Length: 203
Image (cartoon, rainbow, N blue to C red; front, side):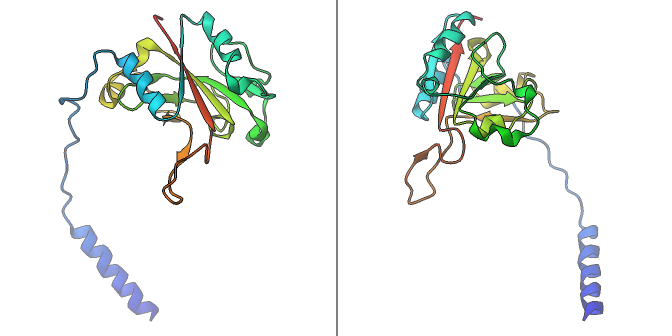
């Protein structure tokens, strides 16, 4: 029986090897992609529609004050921040040896590299984040994005050169959610329960 299986395997592999490799061109990035009169306004509207809360900051100095006023900060005990010039943290992420220690993380604050108006998504990578697990283990997530980094669509985002594909990165769009169970939408099902986005204007 083993000899028969081996013979069949050999035949299958031989047939696969004999198939011609038909090259396919990569899709073009040029096209009639969606554009908005005001990408920042559209980004904010889209983010709100997908259950995020959006706050506008007049410069980076307003960020700390805005964050301290967030509802999620009222009862937060463990807060970690990896955004530049924002001092609200009680935990320095680089001091954590084991990501499992983040299981009690209440609020995590990070800065996005680029935003997309069409879907309210923010690209976050681990350049300044010692443990990327913090993005997903935290109860409440706060993302900061500069208004000048908000583009119309995903094609513009991928063409911008801002995204570093040599390291871990992901799109985050709204708090975690699922509608798999009885087609009922549940917010905060398997990740951050809330997402607050702070858009820094005119930076």
